[in-house]
Length: 263
Ligand code: ADP
Image 1 (cartoon, rainbow, N blue to C red):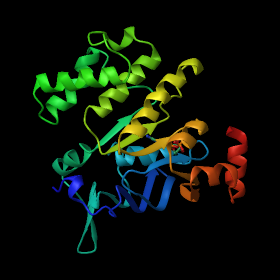
Image 2: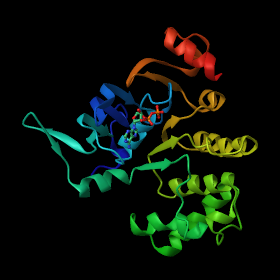
Image 3: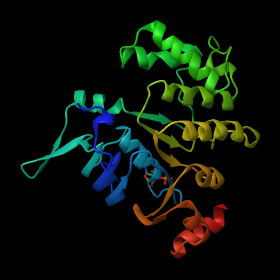
Image 4: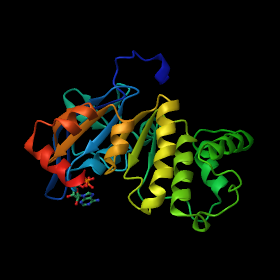
């Protein structure tokens, strides 16, 4: 598998081609096409139920599309076309692809029975094959970065929501992902601690070239961090552009009414 660094820079980090996702009779995404260039920070906005989280879960392979194709660095993620047919790729291939992608969830999803450091080293040791010593060293660096030095041995339940989310961000970064998916990462937090989590993400955006796909209701964060905003409605992209344009001069009525409700 080629390293992301060997790739033609014009190859998108993420490409959706004709993606359809249904839950029973509920068609959530239909014929969805879009690309995210490498290093882009794209915020997905749109009404609740428009399929934004489903898109992140598809990229993370937590859900599987019913039709169409998703490519990461030009490589098929879960399905490929063979002789005109859509063919599922093997679990081993999916696992390899998944290593390039990190996700931070609304509800943190830390392992509750593990300490902070155990949370941080679990995947680097078991998935990437790092030595425990190397993983711990990296874990310590990341804890410093998210402002949690000294919390190595704490259990998640003893931490505040903001601290747990900072551990979750550190855990995602511990895998050195090429793509970071952020799903409403501040929605479960008290308003006064939202800022500390957003500040860490701003720092990650400033200091790395990680491609980011962000679902958030924090429009000022979207504006600060992302270079592109895609507005979804009814499982389709109805408008997209740079944040300044979308937030100040949207062309679609649906975008205008959505933004006037959330801004
Ligand atoms: P958004 O993130 O834009 O609010 P979601 O992607 O969470 O939207 O959900 C899109 C639609 O898919 C909603 O109608 C939701 O009820 C449905 N949905 C999402 N996940 C599931 C699931 N696991 N089972 C059944 N329906 C689901």
